[in-house]
Amino acid sequence: MNKTITIIKGDGIGPEIVTQAMRVLDVVAQQYGHTFTYQEVAAGGNAIDQYGVPLPEESLAKCLNCDSVLLGAVGGPKWDNVEPARRPEKALLGIRKEMGLYSNLRPAKIFPQLADASPLKPFIVAEGIDFIIVRELIGGIYFGKRRTEELDGQLVANDEMTYSEGEIRRIARVAFNTARKRSGRVISVDKANVLDTSRLWRKVMNEVAEEYPDVTLEHMLVDNCAMQIVKKPSQFDVVVTENMFGDILSDEASMITGSIGMIPSSSLGDGTRGLYEPIHGSAPDIAGQNLANPIGTILAAAMMLKYSFDMDEESAAIEAAVEATLNDGYRTGDCMSEGMIRLGCVEMGDQIIAHLKKR
Ligand code: NAD
Image (cartoon, rainbow, N blue to C red):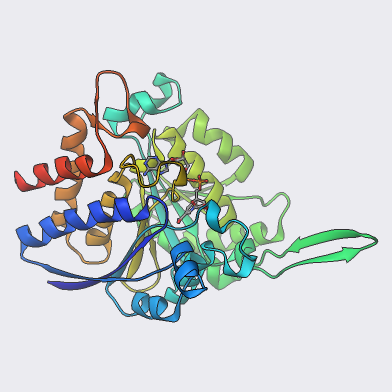
């Protein structure tokens, strides 16, 4: 197969981790007879420096004209004081919106080899952590109208949160379809005791549930969900929620699995083209020092092969190579524990590639 992949290395550790993922993809291409053509584009802080905007038109055009996009991370303190409309994150919001990526799937799965790195008590971890958060990605408060104005001598800020039935229905279907491939349980998270958007969310979730008699649906308030994720994470299979709640809960869920450096995510719309990235940010504190964990990005590339290119075997081969490398005791600093062997970003890439080549 020939696939064109748009590459956004981004800022901070972005270039280091994406480079390792591309090395892994190159080995997969060689082994399985595929051709991956990369088109690298600027987005985020580096694009502000080069072009004055976080998402140049040419970069967006290449995201819209490819088979999938692989992203490192954008942002950093250098651009913290840029005017809000031109901040690095605007690039991501723009790409998601223009590509119509309304669903974000983030697995929260503990690697048994990293059980020690979880901040949870061992008996909670031992019950297992393996769920997926389906987050609505292009609606809600992050995309609502906002304004700050002076009223009665003080500044007053206002952010609007809006959801339509259609926006809720399509993300509900993603969640129910995902549950069908897992253990058939959806927990929908909202704040229906307070918010109108949540009451509509709950109503539409219940309607869509009728199309899926084989899947069970429960509702949970977001504050309770935040507690349950640390108290009894084994109860979750598929969690579906709106944009802002999903943003917060998915970070919480990633923390309990040990290291945010290990977790990939995929964003998809109605077609097969997606945006794949690790869940973490650009980690400016360790950028350029060969300290970053590339595994989240490498697993994001594996997700891309599976969900966008239908290359299940190739994707599984990458996952197996990552597992084997962890079994060998290799760790980057973020998930290092006693008795393990500490590696840099490039060396972690080397080990994973060595396992891939053993196949
Ligand atoms: P962060 O995820 O970049 O870093 C949080 C902590 O985790 C840091 O100590 C960092 O060193 C560590 N870390 C993150 N990824 C790691 C990896 N792969 N290997 C080892 N350690 C890793 O979050 P932050 O510090 O809040 O944000 C830094 C910048 O990234 C900000 O400008 C923020 O806006 C941006 N950001 C971008 C994205 C994105 O591009 N999708 C997401 C979140 C934050």
